[in-house]
Image (tube, rainbow, N blue to C red; front, side):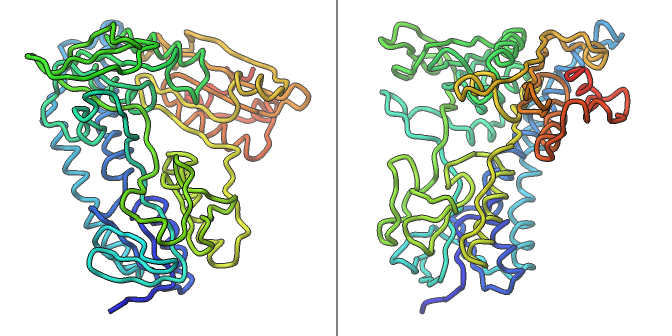
Amino acid sequence: MTQRFDVLVIGSGAAGGAAARMLRAEGLTVAMAESGPFGGTCALRGCEPKKVLAETTHTVARVREMAQANGIRGNLSIDWPTLAARKQLLVDRVPPRSERSYQDAGITLLHGRCRFTGPDTARVGDLDVQAAKSIIASGSRPQTLTFPGAELLSVSDDFLNLTKLPARIAFIGGGYVSTEFGHIAAIAGSEVTMAVRGDRCLKRFDRDLVAQLCRASSALGITVLYDSPPFSLGRSAGGFLLRLGAFGEQTVEADMVVHGAGRVPNLDGMDLSAAGIETTGVGLRLDEFLKTSNPNVYAAGDAAGHYQLTPTAVMEGRAVAANILSGDHVQPDYSVIPSATFSHPTLAGVGLTEDEAAAMGVSVEIKTRMKLAWPELTRLGIEHSGYKVLLAPDTGRLLGLFYLGEDAEEVVNVAALAMRQGLTAAQLLDMVWAYPSFGYALRYMLG
């Protein structure tokens, strides 16, 4: 027997959830297929559990930095099993809560892996489904690495699920996963090495602030190795032996080696060709409305492959839902996307980097400073900090802002709002801000 729906949503995370709720609110029949626990990457194995670990280690690092100057006495350390149990308690609450929420909205939940059987049909577990429209919102997975011994790598899920912290951890890659998890592990007491393929980390952020963050990493005891692609990974008497470099000339011994070298859309096992859905070799072939080569199938979130961020996933999910409801007319707006790396301290940014502006031939006025002496930072004992602001020379409009320091994500959120509204530096300086606060720090950057 085949069940029929107006829309089949594949995936229960931020993108799929946003689309499904919007479509159901307009009276469409909606089914949601999920092969694992309901809740999606962010809530179960990404942003939220990571933040439990990061907030705790950030607090410990902050107290350590403040201790001598502020009269704090005693040693502060992290009991990893207790922290891990707390994280898991919060994660375990997500699937039942997600299921209840979706069911209360009138969405039919289907448990099982989904694969297409035709242009408008699919099989979810043992159930045949027909849907006028479908949305692929299946998230992402670690990209496949092919060097000898790559099958021995741990992935981000494995790190998040550790009940005991290894003494030595090596991370392959220099992006969000390696940086954030590396800081968590180092503060908690591990010896951490990051092996970066190229000459820099965190390529989406301003290079000068990334360099400053790398100094903070070194201060935490993290060893960062540049121009060090993985050559091979094997077992050793003490754990693992990771060889790096074009000829394996550099070696690192570790008890755990974590794949932090990027993620790709999770499209495995979907039999996309059965639905006439074309791929590019990297991901799905999509038009400006996030529609695949099958005019009745869309994609959103990590599966769409544009940004691997929860807020953009929600935006894409809502855009796809609007296009299903009223015809293709909404294109996701990626012009102002704030993002943050929850390291210690936090690095956040929005808009153009200096390198991007130069490559595009955009004329900018730059305001920048490193190792800030603001009282907001010095009273916390933060030594590694900085900012870079890009302004349009003719109008004073904000084109980009990058900040390394406490509450950087919130400062950048305000900057993103200003950019969306086209506010100028003069208008921001004319505002009355609460003081002392990190929002007020915008005045320091722009003044």
